[in-house]
Image (tube, rainbow, N blue to C red; front, top):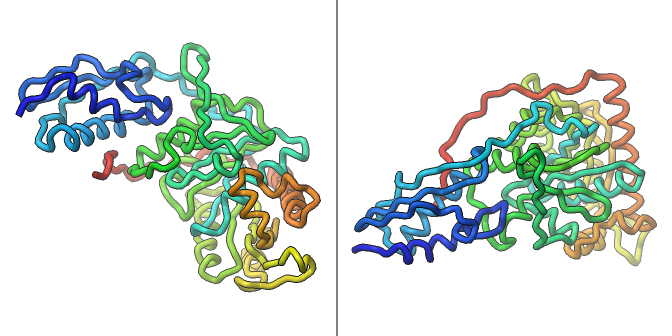
Length: 375
């Protein structure tokens, strides 16, 4: 079987550059296409040599050709890479950001992104300049919570290098991998691909001057967490949990990771989410569905502050789904709870900065994995 160049070009239009949101053909990235029988070869032309999506795009090209042209097509090893510019990196990553705060959880489903979103807005309401990175690479939810789904960040040129401009809403500058992909697409990325994407959100973005940059991390402990502490000096971490024993057991792992000798990032405190259920018609009643004061006891055991207890209120879920975080209603029960939490976070950051030396970037050699796409 032989194929035509027109065949191959048509198929390659299905490969989208995640950052630019366009297919590689319309971006003029496909050059020197040559078809000889079953052998297909071409060059992928990237703007910069450290584009984090090089491996993913090359593998995507192989996958679509094998799927839509011929599974036996000779394409592997025949895709060359070339680039124009090497992006200039500042070893003082984010020099204009005063405080970098990691928002983490031991397990999924505890409302970490809800806490991060509302905390960011609450800090902004106090007059601070706030940014938010959605580092939950595999399940980005910040675009939906801020009602900016479908938006694509602008790219500007600074010293000849492409720099991403964060999306802004509710006074918060934010970036998420969700801005660069179709919301219905599943991300199937190995470690290096995900960590390179996070590095780009940190280093190749115009954050400007910020008082706080919050980083919404994936659940658990992973390459993403290590990449963050290696890339930037993290001021401190906030651990989110529910009162359940199973959630608290995982929260302990998160505390241990940040406070361990290798990472050594201060834990600013714990936030207990879903602390109790309060029906709208009975605002003074509290029903402890998942147990009572689990986080409070864990905080006391580890000699850490409890910086917030957030109840289960229907408006929190509705606000997140509608892209209107609950803290926007400052007079509501949860609005007041988030504002109080922000005050405590600011106090803990100030106390940490007054009593401890600045955090240093962590030097760890991560385990390397092959970067490819699962078929």
